[in-house]
Image (cartoon, rainbow, N blue to C red; front, side, top):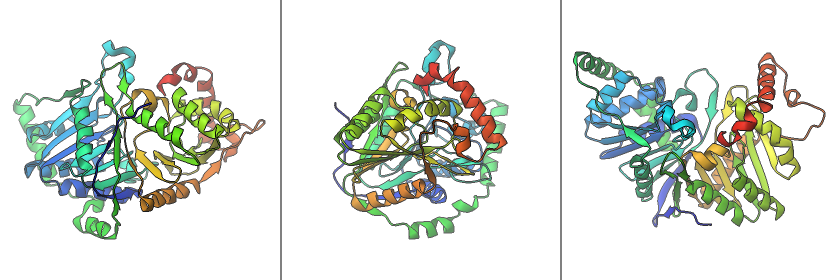
Length: 423
């Protein structure tokens, strides 16, 4: 089995962004310090405080001469048309991934799930967070617990290449400037005035960002590797990420630690993990519980298969929280290799969606990653086979949990078996 990824010779500086507020500040800092180019790919771009703050930063960057390119999944682009007009008028280029069409039939399911931001081909962020309030804990809603990596150094050239392979693929279509009639020009003017008067959210104030940066410990790393998928057509994706993970799993000798919000194994991933267990490798997974998963269809499939996985030797832990969903995607191999990115342990990531991840092997960074993993696990409960106790009774029974349980049980015997390939 072969895997394509690039190793960049030279030392990078790396920070793992586990704290959502720190992640937000470093993303703002990256944009503000851009001088030449800025490339952004995201699965979801929202229409709230965080997304508006990011747009304001992009507009200021464009006005000072930074060349900006954005790729957004077409089904998850929430930027209003009026704001898109302003961005395009400033020279910001925007491409949408796989716009919906009835002619594509099932191929509409193919999505751009990568999240990567690259500044000046030398600084970048890779991880699982989308540009929406819930990933940065802005607001009182239930938020997504996630993790990213901030990297400065020569591997930024590789990150740029990863972005450009997506930018020039056949499944993205560029937004063109809307015809400049009186209404469009009025909208652009009003949008511009809005951003000129925009009051920066507290987390993005310069003094707050300076304080955060002064407290961060940038760890030197000499072997940073970026692995990404390049979509070739609507029919398939070059799954370099899946090939990479299988290659790592097959070479493991002692343990594999995984954080993933969803567990729906593809055949190839399952076979590799089962083979690892059979040769004595400990495979431990922290995933969502009934209470913390945001996907009813995935839950229906996961709980139908969970007992079998446990009996086969998988050590599964389920995250428990009242105000968070687990959304982190991290793999630790033999306590030596750490991979963080957008890749979920599900069918979509394994076979369909475009994904991006970064690997590092620096001992200090690995220890930091293990610390974050242990912290997540400390808030999880070991999943066990309960022959006579339904999943519903593993937690406190509430109206919400009862309703959720009833829905997933209905899905288990109706829809989910037939669409497992697309979960």
